[in-house]
Length: 316
Image (tube, rainbow, N blue to C red; front, side, top):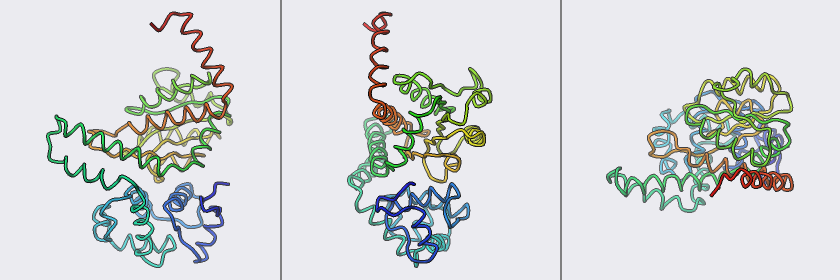
């Protein structure tokens, strides 16, 4: 059973919350609850607007909008009353108690202040010059920091266990995430052979899913605005009994509800599209994590790869 870092089980915490005894006291507890709500495993439910608001709030660590219910409501494009109801539904006596948990997490986040200051200072500079370069780099640094601080190690280890124990692994992502999927396949195939790209240009998505068994794993990747095709494919795979690992941005992502493990990746930057920087880092972490689960197998596979590269005279 997945557990909070405080040691309380998710089920026990939900039961206590349903009895009016407690509410999430840390950001980790809030994330765990959001994950269970998305999967329909919690004793409470939220409407679509409230669920989306909570998912966005969990991404706002260090944002000045958290200082005021009015400013936060404006940032999220909801009424302040929606936030008050959300707080009470989560078990808090009012928005203030909910806000305190969010602000405590903001105060504990190292480096955010300087990142925000740098972004503000560079906002008016020419995007084609050093100002634009520095801003984008610092935004990605901030995303990496948020990923590190918010990483749920239980979900990460669940993902590596699923991937390394599966007879067969497929990775699915389209458009920008096709690049992510290809990179993850390349990295995982350095340590195990039966990893494939689920691609309509080769075997075909329907054919690929049909060829998988209930012991296999589908890694699905997408972020807002989510690809309907990737979400539908993940749902179809789950209905076939295939285990799904979601690489996405929020607990409200449509990939989460059908997943056995979900890894959340911050990606907001001034890049003209969704940034893949932290997603690629996540892929590297997963590849290394899977290698660490099966160290001897990974060493043998990498050694065999090196020998073949030498034999074929591939590298200078």
